[in-house]
Image 1 (spheres, rainbow, N blue to C red):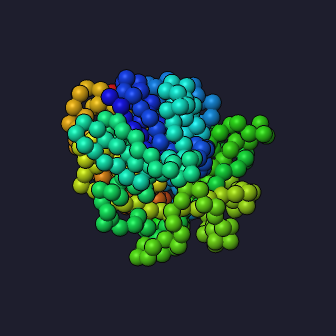
Image 2: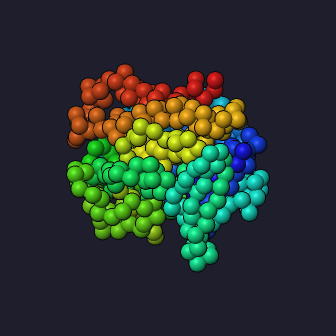
Image 3: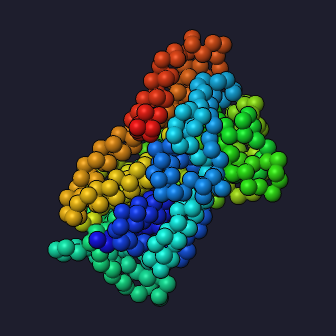
Length: 415
């Protein structure tokens, strides 16, 4: 059995590794001329790390990431709303990692080259469509490395991991609208900074109009007394009724003058000065918070969707990359258990699509971060006693309800 994987991002590379582990031949096709370590920080949750640990990647991840100790939700005045341990410190069998998105991609890419072979990763191949006849599926490319020559490759199945603007998804849903923007712009950056609290803590502060996210993603810094501190600011620019001001792109530089009004005199927290941190960041990125409505079908006989091509979601709850890794494991398991590719892809569709659709809809409501939205709505100027604003049971139902929905409770992972 041979699988053609369209896209060399986290989802595509993870899929290549788990399929290879199951004895399935794979080839990866990436539209960029090289696979570079782009982006900023993300969190990878224990249910996804469990799959990467099973691939023998834990030591490689430890070299480039930080094992998250705790998550703290605060209002914009630094008043604590919720605190919980994470990963091993919460009793999971595997850690949660705070990591640079590019470093996670790099760990996966290095493993693919070592185990599958660099010759199996084709760069500069832009997929423009796919077709299938009988027992074969063919992907159609423009080979940018060969003067835009047209190139076709054939296998037993095609897995589209080509992101929110997937050409394969567009082929099956030609009338689908552009990604939906909720009016929130996300700015993200990282720079060397003094650690706060445990040195492995994650803070999310603010509310509905603006949120601030802070966590370290690496100890590999020029100054041994500092960490690579990741930060993100999400601020509402509109009501989402209009298209985003710029096309969503994870690697577009942001404008400091546009960002500063959403930080100055907004966040009054004591773990660090966010204004100083942001001003010290030489280059940071912007991204309009976009997703797509869930579709009624991912698998079309021998062609299927995975990761952001299947279920692009708002980047809340640390679930984008994690869900792509879970997609990969589910698909590999089903393909290894059957010689019927079409049936396996249909089973994968039935298993993963409803679960991720729920997460997409929940993320639109704020996901677990809704705890700070609830408190800000009721107490925009802060509070004296939190339990007068929201009960522990109400807050717990939001946070723990999300972990149950996304299936990363301790019971789910350690089972």
